Image (cartoon, rainbow, N blue to C red; front, top):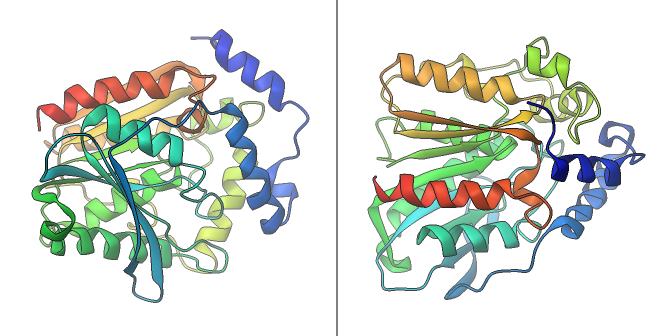
Length: 300
């Protein structure tokens, strides 16, 4: 399917912007604030709690977005996209508010430490520690520990998948939601080749992100979850974008989950581009996804 009109309009606005891999890390982090121009107004929620949770090497800024209603609430541990290098919770505030308000879940978001200052496994270790913290302290934050799942987009989808892998036998996750996840260091797939440039996220940028995330560490199953055994994982919702270098990562992972007997739903938003979660003001797909997640999560 060809690009839809909304995605075409976004790409026209982005034309001429420097590629992230041509910038310094500091410049790339600053450039990401440009996503705010593509976002809608923040949706009201009942309450947002700001606090820190202990990580293995640092205290981590965290938030819980509470929906209206009475707890204890089912909860989503949300790990934001970033290429493991950029972005933060402020950039995701609109997306997180909408997620809580639409699904009725408390949304627990943590600002894990970023590469290259903190390469693999630090972002994953932070994410796992925060998830374990929520299970341990669920009662004190009005969360039902029997209904906690993990979700992330892009690099956050990678971390969410890796947390689910690492949690087997230790944390009883109820579900995993992987949105446009980057799951392997394989730049030869059809989606990487067909969408190498011109679609908001490029293959060159993904190479840059992966090089910062891995540093000198060899690729492991937890860094690239597509290489891992997926037996015994929680039910999964995998959302992919049709015009996205990492599209095939999500598609292949969903197929592996299904082959292993893991309940999985694969949803492709055929006409759009990778960063739709951060562009709800100009792209409809994130709001559509939230409506579908509300139904899917309601059956968990």
